[in-house]
Image (cartoon, rainbow, N blue to C red):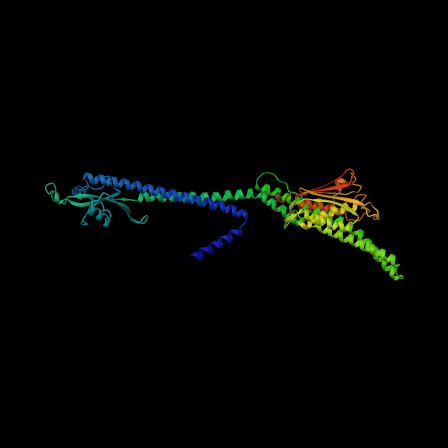
Length: 495
């Protein structure tokens, strides 16, 4: 049985899961109303049945007990000579049974059903009555039989002078249950009919509600299918404030985010193609020149060395550009696999790295510990880019290393309470260029003659946003440009 029930449940779940949402809502409404109607109908039927039987039992018991006390029906002459019609008991059978099992009935009336229960009442002469149902309901004789203790005087005996001859007995009354059965049958038919009508009405109402409620969802599904087929990311119109409207607004927000991501990708690809074209063209030109020179007998050693140095510089620039493009192409909304990082250690490692590449600069570094949650590689790349940018602009363009050992520029680095400031000693940033320095591939007029891809500061901004921080630039009077990077403390960051 358990295995059969499990298989039935699995089959039912499989069938339900194959239905559409419309059909599920309709089925759910019909089943819910059906269960409610069934429970109410059963409760009403059982309550009415119990109440009718209780009223009948109380009535019979009281009437039979009163008849036994008055002694009218316990007198055998009265019982056998007076018909039940005369007593107004046409639907009732009256009889009496002695302790020895001998029974007596009313004139012109069948004897009520009597058996061991009634004999036991006659023998025990207790205070309680006997109640039982005899017969088959809706299939024949169906009676409710009541027996109460009584006494009778045998015929042809004078019990007044010989009271010891009075015999113990039980007065038995059986009333037909046909009216109650008919009432309960009619009640059952009415409950079934109204229950069926309620289930059908619930199914129709559920179908209408599902059709009306799922219409916005159908439009949303159509819009999603249209986007999948045409890649048209136009938002869909939304009205209302229900759950479907919220879903539509979330869908529109997703479309807007996807459109922004596609736009960024297009701009990145377009800008990358433009920026890659220049170093690739330069490398190809130099290689073609080298090949032509080799066919003509070769270049002078110093010219060949200069040409190879130029190719190597172009390849270094191309490598840096490809690395920057790879970093920006990730376009992840937040840092993944974050770990607890000591920001001062990241800045110190970056200073050591950049100082090797710019030995002619003076470095003024002050760092205080500051823990953050984040990606150590990305933060290190961002800090290195800031320091590289400061080192590049701290040395005047076209300047040669000083021979007296004095530094040709100064870079000031401060890390206090999660605020990293990097200040160079260069000419600063033009006011027209300040709002654009963090844009991808943006190169100011002063920077066009210097090496770089125009992506370094864009990577710094990208890293700051991914870690929940911010970056901004300004000019410092008497110095050069100052870049300020702020990151939240690890205790306030969400992992």
